[in-house]
Amino acid sequence: MEIYNKKAKFDYFIESEIEAGISLVGTEIKSLRKGSADLKDTYIRIKNNEAFIINMYIAKYEEGNIFNHDERRERKLLLHKKEIKKLEELAKKEGYTLVPLKAYLKKDKVKISVGICKGKKNYDKRESIKEKDIKRLEERG
Image 1 (tube, helix red, strand yellow):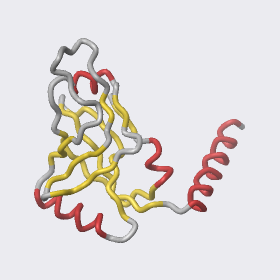
Image 2 (cartoon, one colour):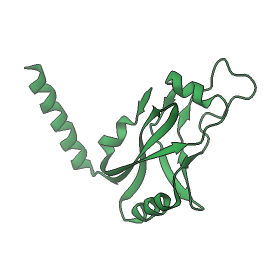
Image 3 (cartoon, helix red, strand yellow):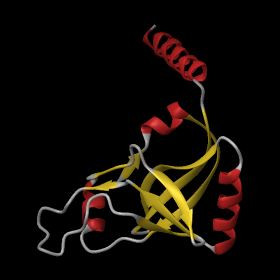
Image 4 (cartoon, one colour):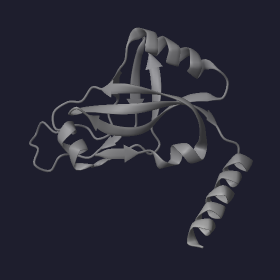
């Protein structure tokens, strides 16, 4: 199970990555193992020295009962205090933001790859599209 934020590489220059755990409740882990999740339009906010992933979609588990979870709730990221301080300092720099790049299983635990990213301008995005098209044409022949 790997879920990617495909738009992140298009919208941002990825400076570095940090691996974080995520706090899940109830049937969320079962939905994630099925691959019923999406990282599109997600971001990470730091408040009260804790990191939270905002707007991550995890579908309700069909076989779940009344204790099913809210699909887009805030979920706490599990990081050391030093890592949170470092992320907070980097995110305060102008133009930088914290973006989840992918969610994956590692030893039966769900991990989130957090990218420290700088936003691309429109001309950078056009350049990315052009490079992708050239690469596609070379592969075809």
